[in-house]
Length: 229
Image (cartoon, rainbow, N blue to C red; front, side, top):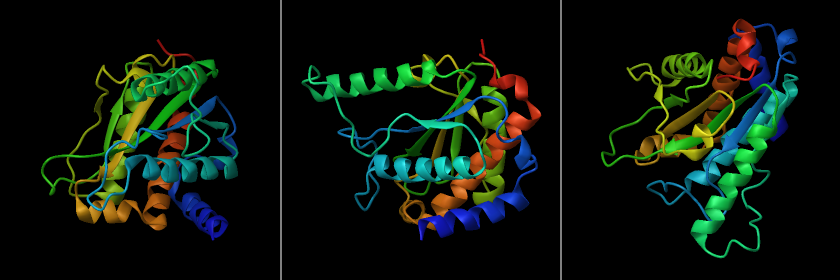
């Protein structure tokens, strides 16, 4: 079933992408970060679904599409569970160790672009729609604006959101040596959107848009795969 979904997605991608698939293998590596995980479940939807599980599903679909399209890709975690170091005894220490491990993996890649997958939450349950953020590295803002525009057009046509800088307190994107984009795919505090985010079809739509926008970006801006300042 999963393979069939991916293949169907690739057929849609062929129609959706402006960049030739032949160019997909050129350039650097896509670094996918499924936010949270392990003891850190992140935000929780109104029905109790942890953010980390949704982040993993969407990032995994992005990885599958990248593999099929010949894109070099790595993930900052290989599973929903995380193997913490024995010396990390408290939850705070384990979370810090996980972030340190992810950052080391990110910065060990050459010519990479970091795409971190998250879900949003707000006090007003009526708020919905994707939101994209970027770090100060060269090319990050351009990619974020492209992804925000595509997400708005395909999934939230009424949205007027624009891409914005990532808050400084987020260590992974702040300390990344690469351009980094953080995508809040939707609001878990909105019951209708949370239900959509749990469905494989909607997760595939999100993945197609993210990988499609990434492909367009590296095709039009190959210099952004170089180490950014």
